[in-house]
Every structure is written in C-alpha cells, then in structure tokens.
Image (cartoon, rainbow, N blue to C red; front, side):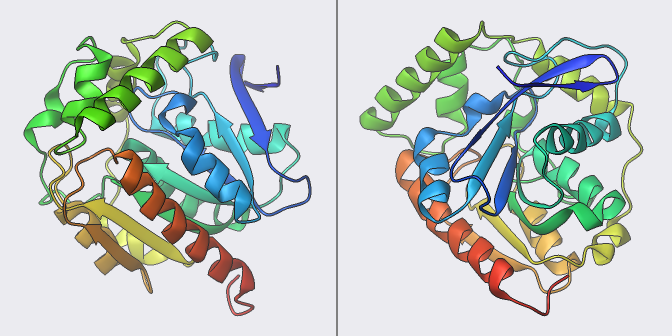
Length: 268
C-alpha cells in the first residue's frame, strides 16, 4: 500500500491507468476520503487516456490523524503525494473544499499543474454565501447526508449511494470527525483575496449544480468570472454531489477539458 510522508503524517494514495500517461490528481472535499470519487468517474478518466492519482487527505480513510494544521498544509500534502508518485506535473480536479485547496495549489505551486477543474467548489468571494446544508454535522448518517447533497435523488440513486458507503466502510472505518477537523483547518487559514483568482494562468473548467444547497452556484460564477479564460458548466438539476448520471456528464466534460489542455501548445 503506497504511502507518502508529509512531515510525519502518513498519506495513503493509489494511481490507476497507464504509466506514462498524463496524470490527474483528485482532491476531495471537507471530511471526504478518496472514496468520494466513484469508480465510474475514475474509470472514465482512465478510458480517456489519463492516469488517475487518488489519495486520502489527513484524518480520512487510510491516512493518519493530525492536529493543528491548516488548508495550506493540506495543499502541501497534494505536492507530497505527487512527489511520492514521481509526478512532476499533473492536472487537478478539486471538489467543494478541495476546490479551495486547488486555488492555493494553482497560486503557490503553479508550475506543478497543467490544468484545473473546480467541481461544486468554494470560491473566495465572501458574497457567494452558504446553503443550509453547509452546516450539516459530520456525524449525520453518511447515506442520508450524501443523498441530501444530491438534489433530487431517485430510488436507484439511493441504492447506488448505499453501495458506495458500504464499499468505503469495507475499505477503512468511516471517520465522521474528519468534517470538524477539516473545518477547523479552514478556520486556521487566511481567507484568500478574490483578486488572487486572476493569478491563475492554467486552463480551467468550473462545474457546479444549479440547486447546490451547500455552496450556491454564485461560487461557480465567481470562479469563472475571476479566472482568466475559465469555462463554466452549470448542471441545472444537480445538487452539491452528482448522481451517477451526472457523474457521467461531468466525466465527459472533464476528459474533454483535460484533452484540450494537453493538446494546446499555447498553455504553460
């Protein structure tokens, strides 16, 4: 089981896909392990010709617990994982708070990233606001919490979520305190200036749900307006977390974005 060492904190990671292919690193959101990314999404990226690097952030999954860290440390963990995997440069997909971490990565470590994708991501715009589900406690039943974040899930979606939660629990024990620990890390961090978005010079795709009750769509609009050349895709009926059908749409859009970023010689 590969592990990276981030100043004494062990971080679990895995890479799938053809060695030598362009790498996509997946950064989960607040309290989430790598189990957040469903196989359907990872497999679609691999089928699109990319190598996928997934990892468990500290305090989640098979990674170590930690104390007193901030979001900058969590961003640096991504660099540690890339180094452990022998990867000089990658694309990055950040979901929710993982998008906030991606902003830090794109400004402090810009030479390490070929393109960025923000999914249901938080922006530094203080006027974008928070939805009522932003304040859901981490010890809420994981199935019900996931379903509540999906917008209007069907019975089939519920069965899919139950299977995903059971698979995550089989891999490692669930760690509900991770939400509180990651939120505390955010409170220890300096809030980025909105103007910092203009410093991002990589190709960017912003994907968001039109009925997101965690982070309103204003976050996506702010990201797209503030990042030069960013493209915005709003799925009108999507909540904060995608349904399986929506994951398929997002996978297609992400592969197209990554492929375009890789093929464009004008990009750094």
